[in-house]
Length: 140
Image (cartoon, rainbow, N blue to C red; front, side):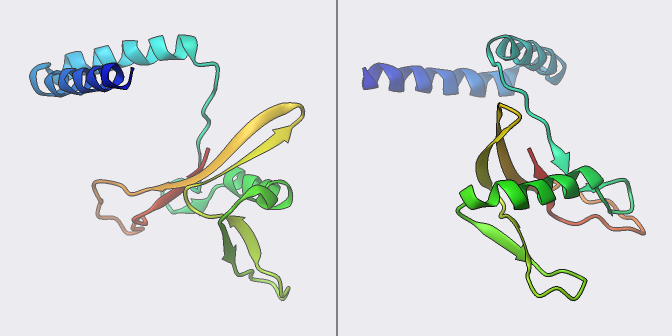
């Protein structure tokens, strides 16, 4: 069974390499779009991404902050790695939030929700008066 599975994976990798090398980018985009629609037909889950910053001037996203506050109160007990941030007011306790690449599960109004904290590094940097940070955090 494992040898059959290994040969199937190897075959898919060969097809993927040929797909990237020999098919024009316009056709690749169309095929990827149809493949995505096909996967969506059988996948019952929805992915929602909340970026840490919104707008050009690196304004902190209100939705991201609200999610951090919700998770701090309700879901940080299930996390294995936490990040501690200092606060600006005079309170002594730091703010705990999920560390990068951490996942927790929570039940919100009888719906099971999987939260994950991630970051991405943009491939190209632009020259601007308001430089963008190298890493972009988001919660999904």
